[in-house]
Length: 596
Image (cartoon, rainbow, N blue to C red; front, side, top):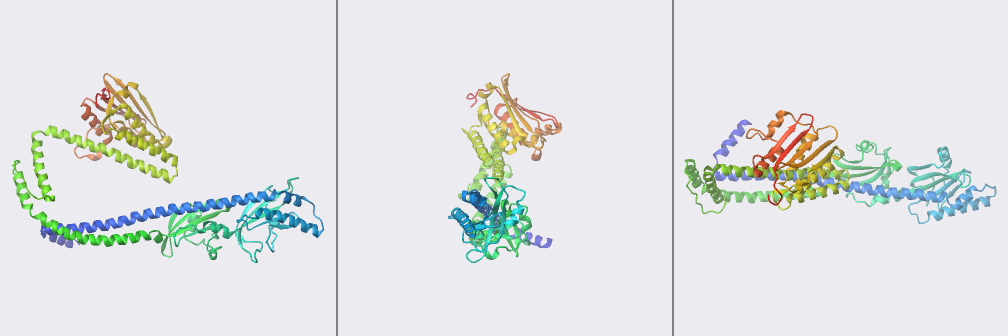
């Protein structure tokens, strides 16, 4: 392997610049396109699957809400029936031996039930079993099996027993056959003396239940159905699947104790399984969709991407050859120019007529020589400008870093369905950036700086809740003085992430401000974990290139203050390990407007 690698390197080094550029371009472009294809496929697949999960969960919630409406209405109509005046009167009357009288009683109660059931499409039938073993139905129910005694015994110890029975074969025939129904059983009493009058049964055809979600689209091969916790399918649009046992399926043990989504492999294929409990009947509503169906469109897109990428590679190779040839011609002139500069001649100029990358390179060489010459003439001034650029870069990094963390918090709040907190944090974020971007000046009033800082702290409170508190104690005169923008926010952020984040108990940040001896003095105080003396010393002192030990929040803020206001101003840190940190800021007491 090492020998092959050495030969490849020797071959590469032996190539001309023209061929090196072409070969490197082909290899780099091909690798980048492959990586881009893989990343795009995975990222888009994850997005598609997440969207499928969201849609399926919404569909399950919709099915659950529809079921809840049906069950609530069923219980309401059951209450209407058992409190009906005719039902109460007839069932309270003593029994007679007259068949005609008993028949008239049956007709009277059945008609009352029929009046209630009429136009209630979800009610298959309504039955009453009285205490004298008589059965009354709402019509069209034949060969009714009396199961009233079973529920009289079951509800013997309760005044108003109520129970839902899982999907099963009906205890009656209708239209010549039995059917699968879900039934409500409720004991009811006499309105006169409170004695038990009977048991009412309200049955719902399973077909009506499955119709509530049969038209919900979760994919061509997706399934949405209901299973009980014994593993039997309680409702399914495909009636051949009704009452089928699925307890042996790999996902069943998981859905018994979980709500949400998970991927399972079945028959050598991956399936997305989304579950939602329906506790009223001890049911689980399931949505099952093949992963390959979810990502089918994504696979087609990836194939097209590969096809076009191959075409682009071919075109890029041709273009690379042409570019490489144009690059190699002026290289000798650039080499001679560099040799002159190396010998110390800074008065030479490189004149190339081309306007391509080589021409731009020649201009940059000339600029480099001019800058080097200027640097040698005035190195102090150039160093100051360099520090300004470095500090500007550090300042610009604050906002993207903070925005990233805030967006992460918004995503987390969305997962928790905390919509109120999302609205609050977005409004605070908008207010924060409105303050940060206002006028574009690095110098702002102390009042504006406090608004920015308070907005930032409000955003942090949404993230940390009751674990974070803050207090302001600012002399009113201080609000009229000038400060640099984003002076306090990095210090507050430093207190949260390095002082309070790892602290047990509630964290407190105090911001104090007052004017003394022509100076504006500010303090950021936290009750966090503090820091040792050695660490405090490292904050303002570090070896060149020792970037890992730098504290950008404190060090860069100190340098910005000195850059804008002078070396006599800046930060002072007082901290004790385990007892919190106090950062004192000194600024000139310049009125806002005069310092602008």
